[in-house]
Length: 87
Image 1 (tube, helix red, strand yellow):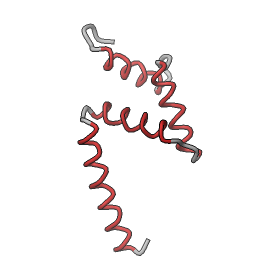
Image 2 (cartoon, one colour):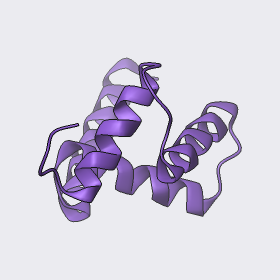
Image 3 (cartoon, helix red, strand yellow):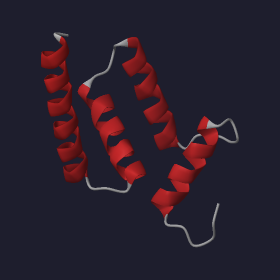
Image 4 (cartoon, one colour):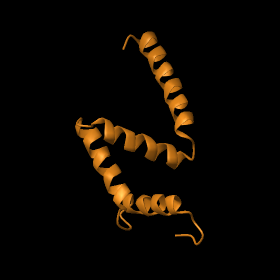
């Protein structure tokens, strides 16, 4: 890890390497990994969804409000596509 990185950046970097199989997950990373597995298996609760939401917004380097706006726009595009293609 780079010297002088803030603690959040260090954790994200460590977890990013762990995803690639090049290290161990942080405690927070283990929680996110567990949440992703629950999402894939269809058994997420609100705490898990909140953890993933904050993780992805921090990975993208944007505020939760900005991430929410992006998700709203993506949902609108998805709905338009469903109407066009009768899906």
